[in-house]
View 1: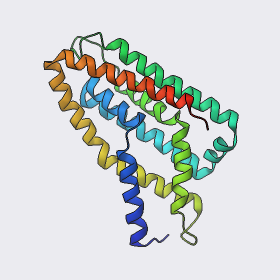
View 2: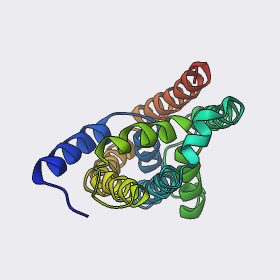
View 3: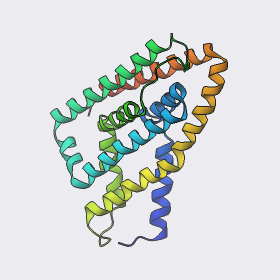
View 4: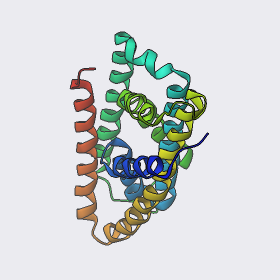
Length: 209
C-alpha cells in the first residue's frame, strides 16, 4: 500500500478542517467537560471516537452503503439520533436550574458518559454518509484492497481528532473552574448547550436524506 506525499497532505488538511467543524460531537464533549470536569470530558471524547470507529468499520464493510440505499433504515436511524440529541438537550436544560458541578451532586459515571458519546456518534446517519462520501475520494487503484484503504483513512480521521479534541477537554475543564466561581454564568452556558443539542436534534429530524 503506497501513497505519495501530496495524497497525505491533502487528506490530513481535509481531516483537520472537518474535525474543527462544530457539530454534535464537539458540543457533547464540551458540554460533558463543563458539567463534570476533565474526567467526564475524556469519557465523552473516547465514546465519540468509539462511535466513529464503528462508522469506519461500517464504511469499510459496505454497511453504510446499505444505510444510504434503504430509505426506511435511514429514516429510522435518523429519528433515533434526533430524539437522542433532543433528550440530551432537555436533560441539560433541566439541569441548568441546579448548581453547577457541586461536590455534593451525583455526577454521571464515566461509563455512562462514554455510552452517551458513542450513541451520539453512532445514531447520527450523517456521519455514516460522511464517511461513505469522503473516504472513497482517497482510494487509489493499485494501492491495496479497497476495504483496507477505507479503514486506513477512516482511522486517520480519528487520529487527527486525537490531536484536536483533547484541547477541547483541557479548555472546557479550565472554563469549569471559572464557572464554579460564577454559577450564574454556568447556568446560562448549560442552557446554551442544552438548547443547541435540541436545535441539532430538530435539524437532523427536519433534514431529508
